[in-house]
Amino acid sequence: MRTYKFVAVIVFFTAMTAVSEAANWYVAKSATGTGNGTSWTNAWTDFNKINWSSVSCGDTIWVAGNNGGTAYTGNLTPTNEVCTSSTVININRVLSTDSVPVAAAGWQSTFDSQVVITNASVSMNGQYIWINGRVGDAQSSVPYGIQFNNTTDGWLGVFADPSSGTILFNASYVEVHGPSCVTSGSCNNSNWALAVQNGSKFNVTFDHTWLHQFGEVIHGPYGSGTALTLTNSYIGEDVKVNNAEHEDLLYTSNPCGSMTFINDRWYSSGNDGIFMDNGGCTAGFVMINNLFFHWGGWAIEYGKSGTCGPYVILNNSFINDGLGSDGNGNEYPYGWIQTGGCTPASGSILANNIFYNTAIDNSISNTVYNGGTTTNGSGFSCGTGCFSYSLASPISAFSGVVDLVPTGSNSETVVTANLHLSTAGGTLFSGKCENLTTSEGSTYPQLLTDLDGNPRPAASQGAWTCGAYQYQGTGTAPAAPTSAPSAVVH
Image (cartoon, rainbow, N blue to C red; front, side):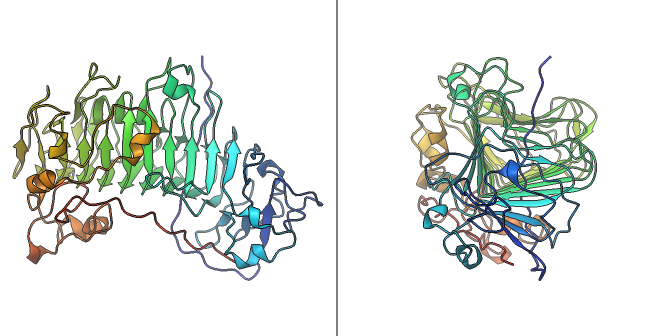
């Protein structure tokens, strides 16, 4: 019987309120002082050296980068009392523009560099924590401020098991990277980058993060009260490995918690994308402005029995390149979005999506204004207002949808692919889908801008472009990386 380690990283967006009593603490691998954490000179030298009895809610822990030197290897295991949303404990990668830590004794300019944590995990039980790398973008090849680099088969980035208390664990600009054996197919027990489970009080948010190269990237959420939110993130490189778990980008089963996916990019799965086993997800999910690219099998499987959902799937692009899970077109060169036997709950809606080389079923009764292919081995069906288009083959006509020349690679370079609508794709999809400004747009304001932040037209300006991108008249270049957010300074 295999033993699993769990990993969970979380991001929280509530505005932080400065507290006069809040303190600043320091972590630096090179520190040689007293090790009490009060300055760079006396910094804690690793995460397992932090004296949590000294740290209070509202405090900030500043972390020095490695500057190409020795990585941190200590596990992060906070033991503080539960805080509040306005007094979270902040763990920030330091930048040279941060006035408070720069003024602390022992500051060195080389501290402003990437924080690398190797083969270590985060264990949470009852804290409000925000880990913030503050810079990074996978598509633009900007290194993330904090990287969990797991080199050994079976390791995971972050673990959370809220058996008691309440957890709000937030992560921004963090990369969780799995072992190289995943892409070579030689892993036997490469588990998860993120696990969200065991908690009726576990709220996890990842913003501007990159989770990749694991046998199963995300496990959970499990528990009717758990909540997982992914925004502006990349989830990928779950290629087939030996005796891995489910080889999905996200796997969960009944009962599962609620999920929200906004402006995310899912890519390169050796098997399925989002797979909800057994009874499916009784809390459902919201999925807006997402890209799916290169997977084998299901892009989304709703569940196998009972009532599942509701599922709200709006303005996403499911672009399967026809290369299949093996990269050669031999296994599942097309994909599906469908139920495995469950009945999607009332309130589910599948609208304004693009399905390239991807079949859908009509198990969601409110299926409207989608566009998709009708060839390539798997039929496309749709409901009210839907339309279809035919392409000769997945590869030769790929430019009919997006600006991309498929490479067949399962490597992480796929994340840099330009999946904006091509000129031909704009002709196909611009103005074809339902304007949601005053309907779903009022409930989900994220719909009112596309994946690049371009505004979608108001109701008086006509229908929207289908998919994640609002067509701008020509193929659109990828957006520049988001600038680093300001850290909370006390």
